[in-house]
Image 1: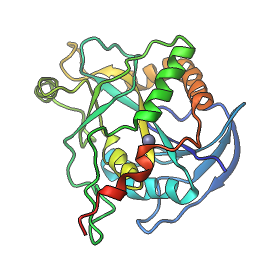
Image 2: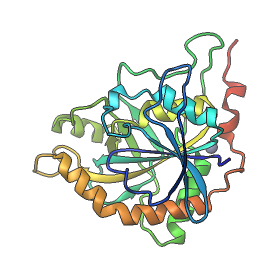
Image 3: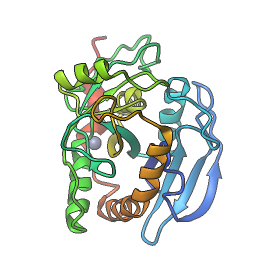
Image 4: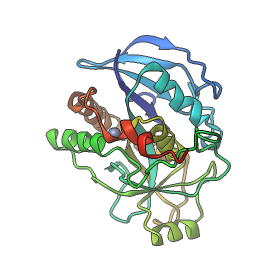
Length: 262
Ligand SMILES: [Zn+2]
């Protein structure tokens, strides 16, 4: 069984032109994940895909059962999770269609369940580098192998949604170092780390964040950019799948060892 999982977001549903091998309905101690887990086959790899917003895109970012989604991957035996996400560009260098591999997170979400360790044993995991460095290296290598221009780092700020941000908020986020804004990176990233899974994001800039350009934001803009970028993302994702050695151990797989105070 494959050890690679992919969790996909807004507008990414049609990205994967692959054969469906099986669908796994998983129940977890935290409730139901967003949908079934699909086992998909590409030319070279098998992997498990989960739609984070549900099959019909009807689960809002603040309502996603993040703990169930990540737990389900662990239960299936996944070791490395590739997160595909649509984000708004804050960094003025970005234009819609650009691909970024974020390396940092600022979390401004609230009222989300952000840990598996509410009770004993308590763990305070190291989260200095919230995205798996090894997976990020695979992403960067894959992009370079197909000569795909990408931004190799950037800070992702996670907002609660579902509304988009105000221009003043985006100005503030820019001042504190954010390059892109999304609504699902947290607590997804921390929950994966808490279960000792590798997790890294491939973010596509689908729009300018509020106030970056003088035009109102529309969901259509996000969908249109995603459609235009599908081919590019597809090629990159296939190369990433070829590049990853799914059996390569990583520091993420041992984070709990030094994280308990009990
Ligand atoms: Zn890792």
